[in-house]
Structures are given as structure tokens and as C-alpha cells.
Length: 307
Ligand SMILES: Nc1nc2c(ncn2[C@@H]2O[C@H](COP(=O)(O)OP(=O)(O)OP(=O)(O)O)[C@@H](O)[C@H]2O)c(=O)[nH]1
Ligand SMILES: [Mg+2]
Ligand SMILES: [Zn+2]
Image 1 (spheres, rainbow, N blue to C red):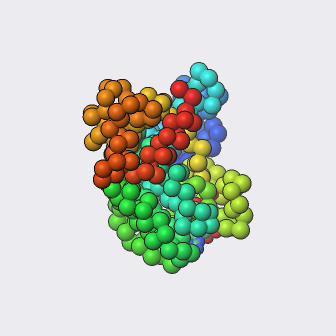
Image 2 (image 1 turned 90 degrees about the vertical axis):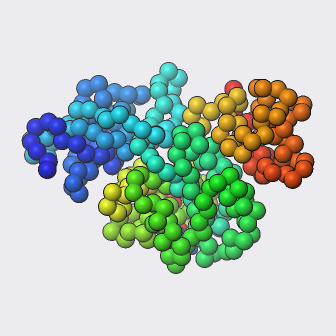
């Protein structure tokens, strides 16, 4: 029960500048953020979507957050300014649903791989959803699908239009908290609406997607989609950034490299130009147990990192 005074517990579902929405027992309470929780990087509040918070009800219509409960796995964005800390986008996440589409916008396996790095780094289980199968044949991308399955990822082919295989997505969402990611226009919000029409999330007009980065969803929102089952819908976060990833540690977030890298000649091999590299051998020689596209993507991302 929500009681006057302090000690109420709820979950943050939206952050709007100095105010946040807190879900508590099926109701939404609008709350302010005060004191030391208020001023994070660039005056942004330190409260993040997904946080469990303790708050007080001061008078009707007015609440204030007193404390953020210890967070578990989070997804963050790099600091915008030097010296400021990374910005948590969503907290207390159990799994990441990475959505891409067959067409409109075009299939982008490289974006999926980037999200996989973020998931593996944060210790969040990834699931890949290939949406809009009503627009084309997923078989065209069978090689990619096999490569992802080969590293232990579940891959589900869906259509938010026809509802095909959405029961599989519902099964995966289960209990806990899922974050739905993927570039703009792939149908993240549409999938959630189809799973639970009561959510009534605004979706985009497909004719507006021309790769110019028009985002229909403009901020992260958390929904209790089923009882005890939370999903965070995110804007097309292609530029999420790889927090804490460097040229040195990137390879750790390619789980398939681990099987070979003890056999590299150098202990600190990053599998780029080093001689006698067992990872490169596993890509190009023998039974080619490491996917070429995944490795090439690794090299591209490696080269894009400053240090
Ligand atoms: N044909 C087809 N169209 C779809 C499907 N899923 C979504 N769409 C359409 O794709 C467009 C974009 O859908 P959204 O759900 O807004 O995409 P989003 O990923 O949430 O986009 P952002 O919020 O900008 O990140 C809309 O016009 C949807 O109707 C699908 O499975 N098949
Ligand atoms: Mg959306
Ligand atoms: Zn190596």
C-alpha cells in the first residue's frame, strides 16, 4: 500500500528531467528528485529507468525519492563530457532482446554484433529477434543466423504485423526485466504493442525511415508487460557506445574466441596482426570454427576504438 510519509518502494519507469515516474502496485506516482540524487553529470538526475527506489509521499500529488536501491546489471552510455561519469540508461536488466529487420530498414548484422558486445560485457543474456519476416525470406540471412546460434544465442524470426512467433518472444520475456534494443524502425515498439495491446506505444511511419535517424521512441520507457515481467523499450540506440571497451579487452566479449586464444603465441594477443594467432587460424583455416563475418566485424570495431 502506498502510505503517506517515507518508506514507499517502487520502480522507476520514466525519467523526465527533474521528475521521474515510479510504478508502484499498478499505479504511477510522479516524483521529484532531490538533494544529492539530483545532480549527476551535466545536472542530470542520477536516477535511472529500472531503478528500485524508496520514496516518500509528501502531500497529494507530490513525492520525493529518498534512496536508490543497489543496482544489478546496467546498460549505460558513455559520459558526454570528460570527467563526468557514464550515464545509466536502464538498470536491473536480466536479458537483452536485440531486434533487427529483414528489410525496411535493411538487415544490419553489424549492429547486432555491437549489441552482443554490450550484452556480454554487462553479463546480460542476449536473444536476437529478426523481425518483419512478412517482408522477405529470413533464409537469405541463414549464415548469420547459424553463426549467432553457434555462439549460443537464441534467434527468433518474427513479424509484428502477422504476429508470427510472438508466442516464442512472450515465452522468453517470462519474468524479470528485458531491454529491447536495435536500430530505429526495426519494430521494437510494434513487437511490444502486439504482445500487449494495452501498452499502446507510439510507433513510427515506415515511410519516414530513410536512415536519417528519425526516432519514434525518444526516451527509454519501462513497462510491466505481464505480471512481474518488465520490458524497457528504447530509442534506436545505434550510437549507444561501447562503455569500458578498449582495443585491449574487446576480444573478451567474443565468447567464441576463448576456445582458441590460449593457443595464440602471445599471451596478450588481440588477434589482429600478431603472428601465430590461433583465433585467426580458427577463422581462416581448418574447419573454420569462428565465423568470418563475426571476426571481420571484430576487426572493424577494433579499428574504430581510439585506445
Ligand atoms: N511489415 C512489417 N512492418 C512492421 C513490422 N514491425 C513493425 N513494422 C512497421 O515498422 C515501422 C517502425 O516500427 P516501430 O515499432 O516504430 O519501430 P521502432 O524499432 O520502435 O523504432 P524507433 O522507436 O524509432 O527506434 C512501423 O511503420 C511499423 O508498422 C513487421 O513485422 N512487419
Ligand atoms: Mg520505438
Ligand atoms: Zn590471437
